[in-house]
Length: 429
Image (tube, rainbow, N blue to C red; front, side, top):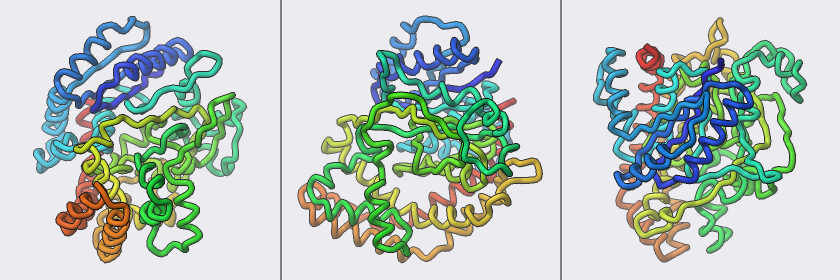
């Protein structure tokens, strides 16, 4: 029986999402005979966790589905045991990277990877608390429908099984390493208000996540495509393609990885940084590993706390940190593309040592480009006025810290990548 981990990390109230994800787990067990470990990683406050616990307690038992609802204390205890068993230097640093005090999109998923290894799972399937499943003919449209049949199996088997393919025949013996789709509905990053206030400012800000040497035409195309997912067209019927999956065509709220990916490379543990959890999409693509791109898109929505007096500056700061992180990630992505097959060892496994070296090399980049990015953000936000101008004042005070943090975040990621195989082995045993 194929044991999988269906994971829902959350730091917000999401009782309906918990119940819906349990329905997807039941679908996977009943339709595919999977042994589903439903993992809810709960970083909410005490009262919200208690409400979630009541939802979990009320779930109807389903054969083949086991529910794990872990608060941060339980997660920390597990991580401490794994770190101690791994015997690595700097255990306190590792624990901070795996369970930081601030929001980290990568760290929460890294904890799921380690727990999936401990549970003996062959794959991890991630969902988000601020999204829901589409309905078609009155039934939920579950992404696991396309994730389970072929993940981890040779691409040639998927093609022989009738899956549409545009994959290079030379890659057909490699395993299907990723299956994913995107989302419909709200932008994946909550910045629609900027576009409503000033289309020109929106272009200026969003274009800052492009490489600095791109032409204006390429930047304009990127801005139009950015954060839009699959648009707004609802699901009407299945389409799935065996391919090298373009990272721009999938979203981390709707993704599944084979264990051979996440047990080799973690995600960046950067705190307060939007988009810090997308690195593995690029690794799979650039290492020329097969994937499945399907159209069971999840419906995205925004929760209101991002627009409150306290939530707004915190969320916008995460967006700015994302822009600064791209100085380093674009460099690493370009070099991974050049490396191609050399990212894999003789057994076809991703080489953590090679990727860690690329990360470390990138930290030597000149930071002038990030100073320029902050200048552009400052000009844009002051033009918008109101609370954006107030935020510009705050970012100006933090300017040097933000630029320094962007580099130190990559250093932390390189370190975690170097020790990750040892952590996975400790978690597994």
